[in-house]
Amino acid sequence: MAEIERLVIHSGEGGQPFNYAVGLHGSKFLTELRDNKRLMGIRCPACGKVYIPPRRVCGACFVENTEWVEVGPKGVIGTYTIVRYAFIDPETGHQKPVPYGYGFIRFDGADTYFQHFVEITDESRLKIGVRVEPVFAEERKGTIRDILYFKILD
Amino acid sequence: MAKRVAVVGTGQTFHKSHRPDVNGQELINEAVQRALEDADLTLKDIDAIVIGNMDHFEGINYVDCWSVDGSGGTMKPIIKLTTGGTTGSTLAIGGYHITASGLFDKVLVIGWEKNSESDTTGAITTAFDPVWDRLVFAGAIAALAAEGMAYMTEFGITDRDAARVSVRDRKHACNNPHAQLRKEITIEDVLASPMLSDPVHLLDVCPRTDGACAVIMASEDVAEKICPNPAWIWGTANRHTYTYVGDFKLGEIDSMKYAAAELWKKCGIREPRKEIDVIELYQPYSFAGIIWIEAMGIIPRGKGSEYIWSGATDMGGELPINPSGGVIACNPIGATGLIRCAEACGQIRGKADQRQVPDVKLAVSTGFGGCYWTDILLYGKKKPS
Image (cartoon, rainbow over all chains, first blue to last red; front, side, top):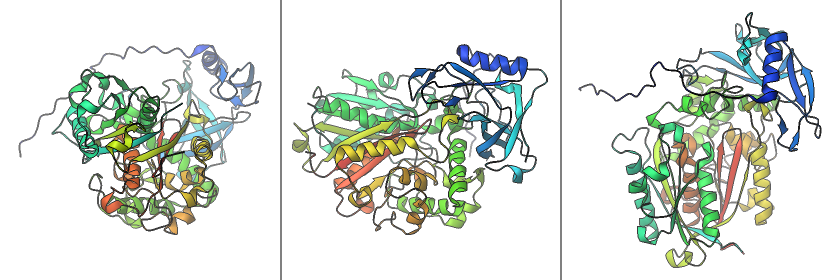
């Protein structure tokens, strides 16, 4: 059978013209992470929930969050998965580095989960409830990649 | 005062993994023609159109505009709805609202997708926050796997228990000529299939599908003139709970819990397990077949697996779930929630052929998407009071 030549549309090598604002709250989180390796959450004055990432409004109470709280840096695995299927990351155009540990981390003092890479050098150590801590990048740029991954402590 | 609304006709394509023989508007047209035929109407009878898909799967925006050759929307009022995974069920709810408004008597609702035309996981990723969600995010499968892992750990079920759900749906799909995957599988097949994202195997998750579905809704002023036994929409509910994926409640789906509770209350359903005859559940992976029926109030939390193993949700059981084979057998995403609606209405109208559940008086369809949000609709044989 003759091979069919398919029409493939590429975006080329050019960068994508998206330029997102993270807002004042997101900026504080990212600058504290970059400059001081500190993790800042924010507490809802009505329900008391501490949000990570911090945000201006608690959607459930619909009030403005005002009280900054430092959380972590240690935390616990709330749930996780190990991603094993290959796919193209639309952020980079390259394949995601599978397999990787995908953790939902609850920092000490926070009520929502922070999603990040978790080490899987020994997969049997990754369980719900294990304690973890972030491994920070040497050179930090003010993105969540300033945390390289989470190390299992237990 | 809102008009009562009924479904008077439905049409589906024969869904496949890849339909290179048609483009988007031609695929849409197949479903529309079948729905018109089912309702014994012509395009002239249609007062308005509601259409939707997930734009980023095809990378083509504004289907409401470019599909008019296929949809029949030329020189008609047409509006697009798109809400991610729930697109199909939102279309059903939106079509219901528009018809109930009394402004349009006969509304054509269309959901479609050609998932073969892009990378599904990459496209889904673009629906999530670029700063906070995308670093580790891996499309629908990994996020759902994290839910499954949390539930599994809390209640001590295993991937074998979840596999029983896949086995059920794939068996049911053999009765549905429209389903994409029409081959029975065993528990061992599921467990031996590649682990995609722990604890979810390949055969625990939905495929990618090309397909379209059309549903014609009519107000009470005309419904019974078009169709002697329409499926009446008794009520709808939906809930959106979270902004970021990490905001969710582990191993639970609050959106389903609260949407279902509202729907049962509005429609006077006291014991859903006993009163409902059949459910078409938007169940993108097998674990949801256990977790989400608990949230729906069918079975107490932690008891879902036992209920599935009892056979109660199989064809011939107390409460058959997914006689069509459901999402695990077929998933043209923008159509998927609307297919659930069409299938539930087919059950009410006694038109489900080999997959018919006997004597259906009440049927439910659901939709699921994004940060664990839920749509739910209840249909009845009887005109609602």
